[in-house]
Amino acid sequence: MKDIEQNKKNTTQKFLTVEEFYKNMKDVLKLKIVAGVKGLKRKITVAELNRPGLALTGYFDYFAKRRIQVLGKVEIYYLKTLPPGERKEKIQRLFKQKIPCIIVARQYTPPEEIIRYANQFNTAIMRSPLITMHLVNKATLFLDNAFAPTTTMHATLVEVFGVGVLLIGKSGIGKSECALSLIKRGHRLVSDDVIRIRLEDGIQLYGSGPELTRHFMEIRGIGIINVQTLFGAGCVRKEKRIDLAITLERWDKNTDYDRLGIDEKSIDILGISRPHITIPIRPGREISLIIEAACLNQRLKWMGVNPAKELNDELLRTIKKSTRGN
Image 1 (spheres, rainbow, N blue to C red):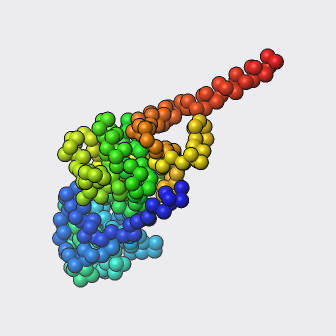
Image 2 (image 1 turned 90 degrees about the horizontal axis):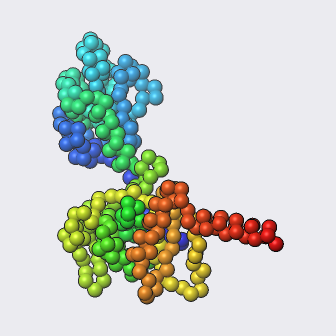
Image 3 (image 1 turned 30 degrees about the vertical axis):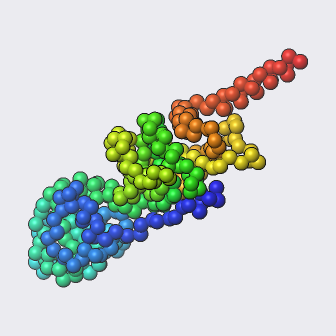
């Protein structure tokens, strides 16, 4: 377990620039920048969005100034009802809060004062044709993923019978070769060598690989291979939920390996526990076949079937009957 802990490096993202948000979401939200281009380098530090209706009435106590501000139908029409002087004063107060940016929904044309102060305070203004609720929902999903706790591990991630398996082990132990054997048997590769793990909704772990090397593998003696090119698009996937961790290690005759599986072990990743087993490597063992069996066994446990526990219970019942007979 010590080796596993040393493999992990926390890379939680602390912020996102407005420019990064725009580039990632401009097609999804159909965004167009209409003012405040110099504010694209401003940082977004929280995942939530805010509709500043209450602030526009003049109440700025507890105002969520670190959030992206969204102006929908209510906010735009409210501003239009204000006298020019009052509208100018309230919009200016909003921009003085140093908000990250503003998105105007429903393709509304923002008041002239918003454009003027956006350029003056270097705050980006974007327009979207989406209705406010859809805009907020889609932007929130993206921001939740962008700000989700993440970590990076030196490992290999494969999907075996629908189970996301994280293969862990020291360099040279044979993780890539084992993954290649599983791919040849019809299973799928997510990524080899470097796995980026993301905690989603506080309960699920999802693994993926760097975009540049996602479907490539290094096989000692051969070099770099492209799994998607060799075996087809059906043998790879972009990301997968992590359901099981398997550590591969060299067989040590002095180590007492688990032979029953009654006491289930686990590994902690980003505060989330996942089932963890250790498979010793030695000549003659078909590791890919053992991993397949481990995955099928894990699926049985999801359905409430635990073979090791069933056997143990049956043995206890037999011993109890034998004791009574004597």
